[in-house]
Length: 210
Image (tube, rainbow, N blue to C red):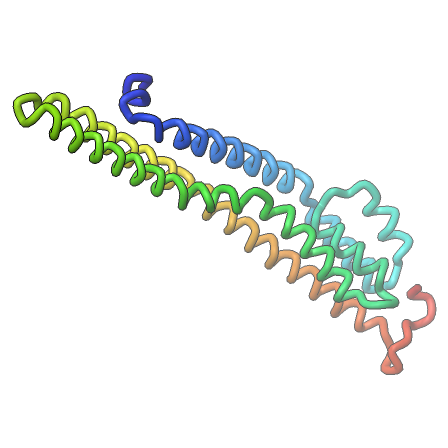
């Protein structure tokens, strides 16, 4: 592997940096989503919605203390701002959570684009070197030309390999963000519906629900 890396020429160093960056981001995102999955508490979410139906806000506050479930955090934000604008409060909280989920995704996207371009750049350099050697040595020494061709092929393969390796986790993480956004919308809508049932036609909360 070291010989192949050296044979690839100077472009292999930025390609190595790209691969390290991609690997670091993928590992960080995997750990992030594992933590998100471990913090989920669907039973508590359903219980909170049940308590909302009766307007028992104090019980909700006590039961959700210390919870790290991102959906619960959004619902609690909406409940805290129920007398002002529940929907807008949840929308702002949801945007913040989605932003956290999309963190570093731009880096992977960039590497997917940059790595093949670097590979092509290495290919061009390798071909130029091959023609320079061919011009100085002639066709009597074909082994001198093959070094440049090998460099061209190695960098192209490396760049494509990094991009291909990055596409799968990138799409997976994007699908996780989309599923999380759908789950947030589902529970936020449910909370709004439940809360609307507590409000009388005049727009005031019924007695005992504050």
